[in-house]
Image 1 (spheres, one colour):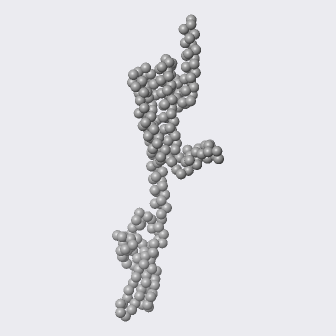
Image 2 (spheres, rainbow, N blue to C red):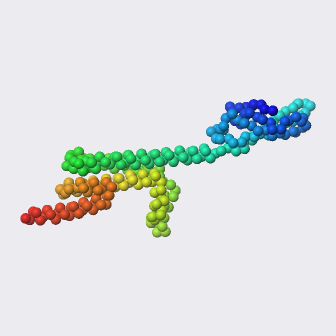
Image 3 (cartoon, rainbow, N blue to C red):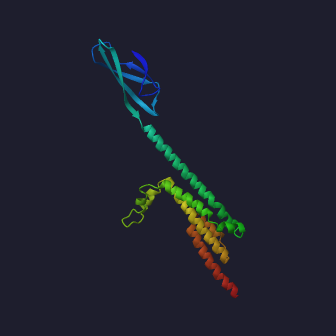
Length: 244
């Protein structure tokens, strides 16, 4: 025997009930098991695998026959809900890290272009005197650092017993895309600042700096070293030519 009803535990969800054992006996306190089949495959956004109910049938001369149905929710699949939320969060963090990486890289290129292509231009000199790029990139770095920070960050940085960083801890910390993006912005800020110092030193001492500034973009320590060598060679050749 089958019939439909609306359950109070599942609002607006029609249930199709099938009695597995016909209740033909009218003895007092007869109980039967029924299985239910919902027309809605989900319950409050979650997958429901098994939904059963107990039927209690009582009969008396005064009240007559009465059937009580007690639904039992056997199992609700929470894995899809949980894994879906974690996956969506990971995608959001990965997208933020990717966008920040691209934005930071594109932001510093015009300043390197000015120092290399037009080192004597007034626009270049005014641009190199401004601190706005460092403030903007500093805010971006702080935001990424906030997103990448975890309770284990300090433990990974100061992993040794002497409160010094260890390579294994740094490697584990940089396994996160957000941490990598923040480190990249950190490098861009430091490299641009070093390139600006090289540029100013070249302008003041009339030294060629375009090759050194170009190296500072991706190989900053080498760019600074090349500038030191260039400056030393220029000062050595200058007095010799002046003496002749």
